[in-house]
Length: 148
Image (cartoon, rainbow, N blue to C red; front, top):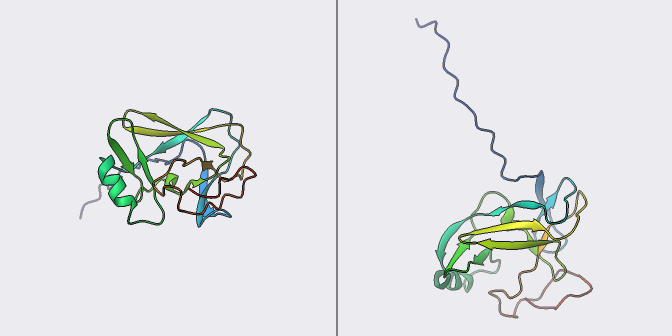
């Protein structure tokens, strides 16, 4: 019989977000990403991750999906976040967004556009989009363009 204690595996406590957030039902569309804490203007919220593909492949995939989580990068590539697990794929579109995307090489980072209070749904302007003005917008903002 072995009386030696079993080695414990080191557990890496990785949180997918730099700040506490949660995915929950959205008044805009399906599920949304909400901040649990106040955010400062221009504060980094996190990074959209996913499969790195060509823009051509991204446009091909976008034609077959109602909900698109594909971000085109500046180098002929795109990020397909349709299967990403951090929750950033749940950020809904708004014509009056409270976040913005910053494209850096093959990365898409999200930042607060202005101060955001705790409990607020995070939104980003997806215009122009792969929907090419054919999908009705549900953001409800005073400056809504009506279509994505």
